[in-house]
Amino acid sequence: MTKAKGLGDSPSNVAEYSVSEISGSIKRTVEDVFGHVRIRGEISGYRGPHSSGHAYFSLKDDRARIEAVIWRGSFSKLKFKPEEGMEMIATGKVTTYPGSSKYQIVIESLEPAGAGALMALLEERKKKLAAEGLFDDARKQLLPHLPKVIGVVTSPTGAVIRDILHRISDRFPVHVIVWPVRVQGETSGDEVAAAIRGFNALDRTSAIARPELLIVARGGGSLEDLWGFNDEAVVRAASQSDIPLISAVGHETDWTLIDHVADVRAPTPTGAAEMAVPVKAELEVTLVTLTARLAGGMSRSLDTYRQNVRSLARALPSLDMLLALPRRRFDEGAGGLGRALQLNTANKRQQFERRSAQLTPATLQRQVLEKSRKVNDLGTRADRLAERQQDRLSARLANATTRLSLRPATERIARNGDRLQVIAKRADAAISLIGERQNRRLQEATRVMSSLSYKNVLNRGYAVVRNDKDVALDRAALLAAGEAVSIEFADGRIDAMTTSGDRPRKQSGQKARSKSADGGKDQGNLF
Image 1 (cartoon, helix red, strand yellow):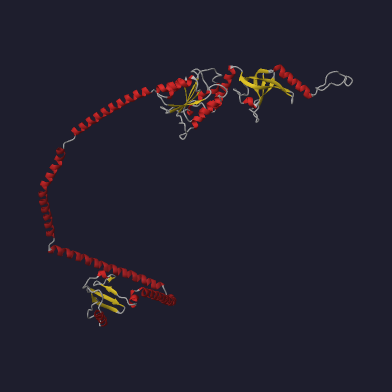
Image 2 (image 1 turned 180 degrees about the vertical axis):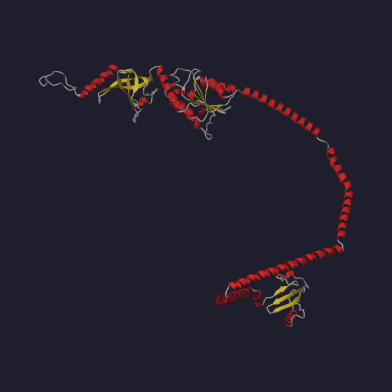
């Protein structure tokens, strides 16, 4: 503290302080006098934690208000988070903030102001989550009838897990996986939510089998003890679970928010185990009963079918009875076949005789005369029609000649004659052109045919051998000894006869040439 000025320097003897000195003195005085206090009031101006992690708001009643701050380290440890409008009891130190000449409380813990405040907070949270549709029955899943793996979220050291395991073992032993969590305290809600999400994250490739059913369990307790199961994170994790979930928190009269969102609520943890699995002995008895009923039903059904078959078999006729009527019809048909043939022959003979009686020479002559008269009548009518047609055409020609004068007709004939001469000249030119073109095409085709003809090959010293059917041969194996052949050279053909010799003889060749020279009168020998 700075030293006061002398009496001669100031008209007053009051000590003089700086702003920092008086602010620090007030701060120490307030902190020494009050220290740790508990303040009850309504939270006002809370907008959530700041980006730095600290929370700033006010506590007020009907006559005053005090600023409050929760540092980041304390905020993460709070069991009950601040909410706007809630009446809370804050525990902390009262201090001042010299920068703005304000006093405030630095809160270290925060709790609702009695059970009524907790219930009000619970109701408000319940309404909020219900409005989002998390408690709708349409979201709830059916429990599996006989799950192979059950996941239990609870404390591993309490009596709850022992009761669940004992009850499941008595009813129907299955594989149970326990996810240990704290079921009471500040971190219980986060741990339970993490356990539910962890079970849902398992799949077939995981080392731990994925449960087919989840049980979230805890023993009874006060509202504060069960508060972790009212946490919003727990409710959302349970609503997002793909695995059916049974809630078994507290006694039958205890209700938490997880009970509303769970697929099924059990009154006790033991009741949850009874809902999870059926009684194995009862299933075995039911199975035996159903097996016996099935065997009896099958036996009775077979007896009924057997009786029906026997009844139907008695109603069916025997083989002899079935064939008796067709056999009788066959015998009757066979017996009447001869008579029918004789009768048919007689009828045909009578028809033939009637027809032959009608075909006499006089009848034929009469029919020929009738046809001749008809032909003569038609000829006469045709002559008359031709004469009438000729008369009509002559009249039309006379009329046309009268209407047409000779001079116009002569002029038209002259013009048409000139046109005919022009057309004739053009036709002659066109015919000559077409003839030349066709002649050139014929010459080109002749040259191509000549170039492709086998006779060009014969001019190079080759020959074509044909058998007696004039078929060209390309293999010696196709000829036998003593077979007649013809040989075509470039200048003509000769006839020859094959022998068994391997090489052609000179004399035979000379005879062949003489044959070609004298027109083929003598037959030569090729081989």
